[in-house]
Length: 78
Image (cartoon, rainbow, N blue to C red; front, side):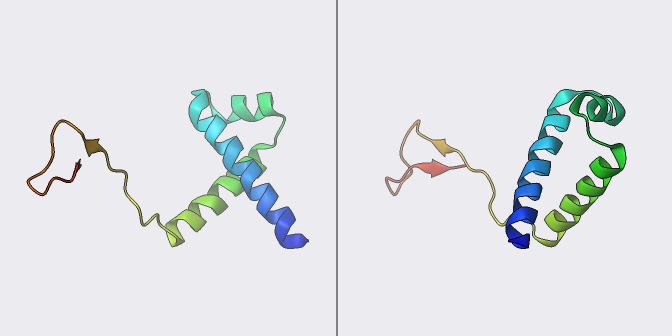
C-alpha cells in the first residue's frame, strides 16, 4: 500500500508542478493560491527533477510530412 500512496502523491505533485509551470506567477503566489507550503513545493520539485535526471526520456517527438512520399513510398519523418 505504501508504494501506491507514494505513486498517487507523485502523480498529484506532477500535476501541481505542471499547473505552476502554466501559471506564470511566482512560487509564493502559486503556493498561496493552491494552499500548499513553499517547502513542500520545492522539495517535490527537487525530488521529481532528480528522478527525471536519472531516467531521461528515450523518445523524441517526430512529425510526419504528408506532402509527398519518400523515394521508398513511405511517409517522411522529421
